[in-house]
Length: 196
Image 1 (tube, one colour):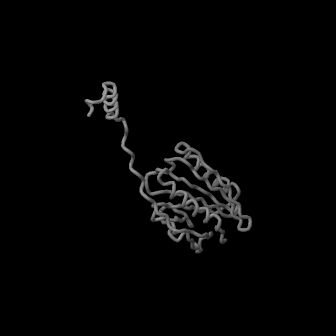
Image 2 (cartoon, rainbow, N blue to C red):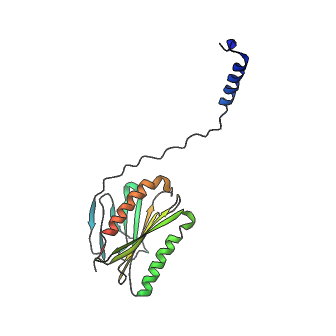
Image 3 (cartoon, helix red, strand yellow):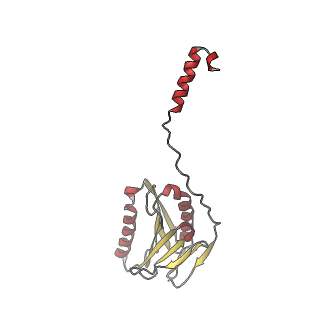
């Protein structure tokens, strides 16, 4: 069949065939696993701790039992996502102590700047419950703690929280889970109260 075509058409077809056989393409990367997110529902954490809040039914609040843990430290554990929101509580003795706690919280955020592509700061204030704070969303593929926050009443209480994953950070693939848990953290902050 090619013998019946004029010579220039045969040459063009041969060149196209030769060029099309050379390939510099790379195989497509493996896809990320599908993440099924549970339906949002909350329950109260209301115990002898000096604070209370609502947290998701698909999570567990576990008092921190590590050797260096202080009273009233706790973790909100998300077993389905291998994620923990670690919360450390400090009683406030004076204004200098409060300023030191706030500065420490900001320095924890600043440690992630080299691995981040930026961060958003959201200020929270609930005058009725005397809960004031800041939530930091740390952007970037390798940020170890994509969400951090601190809350205080400016007089007696200070609580700091950080979201951690039990996997190597790749926040591109974890983005749906990070967004999902960030909503839960915001709900916790909005329902947060001091009990003493």
